Amino acid sequence: FATFVPSAFSPNGDGVNDEFLPIFHNIEFENYHFYVFDRWGEVVFETEERNKPWDGMFKSLPVKLGVYIWRVEYKKKDSSVEGEVTGHITVIK
Image (cartoon, rainbow, N blue to C red; front, side, top):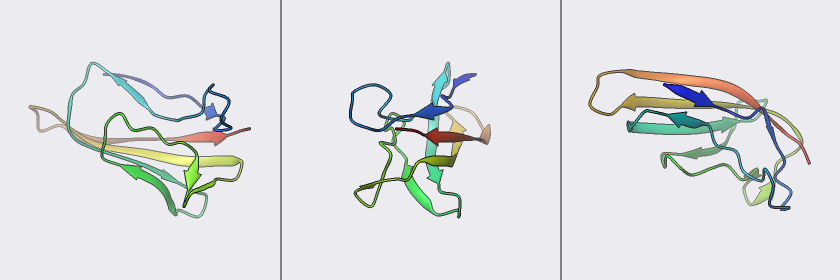
């Protein structure tokens, strides 16, 4: 399957690149879990909703500028294939 993941986003409320979500093409998930971690490994965002993006907030406050690690754990629908995809995202303003 193909994956598109931006390398940066700017959650500043201007309506352009305000959210982050890895995009997967040609795959259906039975299980999906998306996490974002800060540099100390704390989970700042997580969801099991396939189309729910991260808005750059943590505990109702904007996160600091910098690099965050993301991970998607998945199980493909109608298959025994499980896996994970990881990367990093830079928050800019």
